[in-house]
Length: 70
Length: 319
Picture 1 (cartoon, one colour):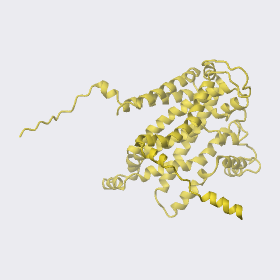
Picture 2 (cartoon, one colour):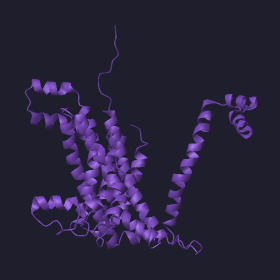
Picture 3 (cartoon, one colour):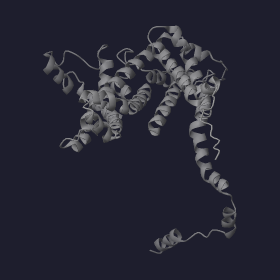
Picture 4 (cartoon, chains in turn brown, orange):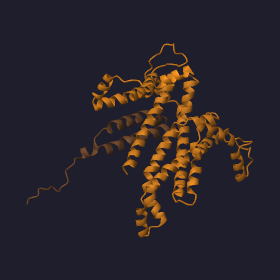
């Protein structure tokens, strides 16, 4: 009896591992959170000025990456 | 009498459906039938949600004023956005909002989790206590605003008398709503009073979802109560706590009614949260284009936070 079973784990490249929904959503979430903190922090007017762009970028990124395969 | 009988005849008369219509509906595919049912909802959503949003985005690039609808509308590009994002007054309003959001969420989470932890012990009469604790959450914000305005009255307010009793200060020696230092905290207290029960409910759901066999296994391993709390209770209830934090954060970021009723943004601008600034720009200064741009900035922030909220919700669901 010949069992043709491959016991080794399939090789997954770093790019494939990174281009999954989970890590990409985590990155987008971090960008959104950073944008919100920049909007409400009391230290720098420059950070406040860039907050909207950062939040918008994070939100658009999140919307796009939530369509990426699991 | 005669009229009445005629009208009842009209009311109860069955309306015959033409056989052609029935045949035509029966001939439709499942997908077509599904579209037929959801089209009214989609049209309604487009009319009351999507269209106002697109219209607001358009207005945010113009100098339109709602009190001068016939004046020529000029395209200003991103001028309003640049103006808002470099304005120190708007930045100050954002900091007032941040103060309100951070402190309310912190107090509500600590108290809410503590109450949930106690209620979860199922002591005698815990059902009654749960109902009593949940009462403030069921009240309308308008009622709560008026109710607390009376409680904060320096002459007749119960709150001042309770503080005076414990601190020894005169009851009329301080004004919770009229003092620059105290008024932001007055709003924090009211919001925490009203919404801590909500956080408690979510935390209670988290605590009740922890299976008993995990605690039994910990008992077998002789883990102390303190160790069980840090290694089992808190990590397993954490997704629910996160959910409560995000939900309360989003809600308090948009807070308008309670602040408007209690202080109206005053004294000065010490309690002027972003939504009050927006209302003043839109309906007192009638700067519709400017306020539309401000609304879009707040919308993007809330939308971003809502994305994080949905992600946290999915994580809780998958557990």
